[in-house]
Length: 483
View 1: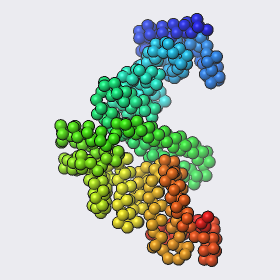
View 2: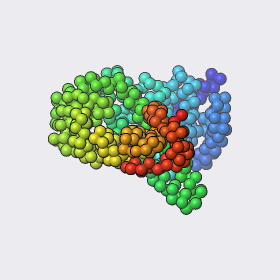
View 3: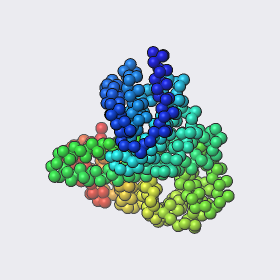
View 4: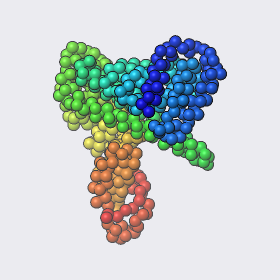
């Protein structure tokens, strides 16, 4: 077995001495098309057998690897499967030969670089896939050998600069980890972590926004298909919606992980220290002021003098939705809710999806604090439209409903607000698991205020019956008794 492994290693490493000289401008099947097609057939057949065993180590075939290598060397443009299958082959070899891991990683890098050269565009869509391949390359380097963090960092940095929209969540996660390694090993300054953090959260927010907009379109299309009784189309849209929702959950998970990784470098004290020094150097740097106010806001460091000074400087230099948002934060903390509302209204014009969501959410809080419940609900609904996957807007509405009991008279009517409040809590945790604990706490509290079975009966109602809560709420719910 050991002899066979060394033989396989020699076969793989042999690529490094030949592929660079291969003329990838030749025809699809290379100079010797007969040999290429023959080797393609051999390697694919063996690969299918290996795939059928779920890539069992016992089923690896030396003939498969040798044929695959020949295809890669002689006709690298024949199929993209050469590269996707090649990754699996190399993954197996890297894991099974830890002593020669770096040699295999080098071969993997060669594989990815050649794929970029031969297939810069996706054959299915015609769109560039270079940044995506680079992102995957950087992620694999980092995941296989953390000691090669600098190499991974440079590759991933270049991928982000080329086209951040192509980066999958796993690539972003690896990039931020490699960035932290660079700083911890004193190859980059601490500010780099802050800059990359903001860069990546912007990428994640942008990708989530695109997916949220796509989900809205898919839901509308599904509704139309359902109304047309097109069962096949409905089933197709259901699959697309499920896939889209999984992507949103994935990106949100990565964003949460990036936030957690950032925490050790994100204490208010540390951030203020780093940013204060930078702002002292260039107090009129608009991009720096945006970075300061955005990150201090996200990390709840808005009570600092730095945040206020940066916000004022930014608003004077470049009156914008972003600057207005930061002033709104200060006004809100000073309990000047009507003034804060004016700035948050301006902030809703931002091009940053996360900022728009926060502006509408905070606007809802402003209206809630001055007793304008209708306006507060309208703002919360707009927040949920901006981010359909966020549960917090529904919790805000639930609290608005629960606070409205005094506006209604009658033993049942005054308690009915808690039914619709609980409905919103269930909706919140259904679409956003991250708010489940808060939603459950409110459900427990509000359920205590449901009318008793006797009260429902003596007012000529029945549990399970439909009930419309009137007034400004005007929503239909289901009658339930306190348990």
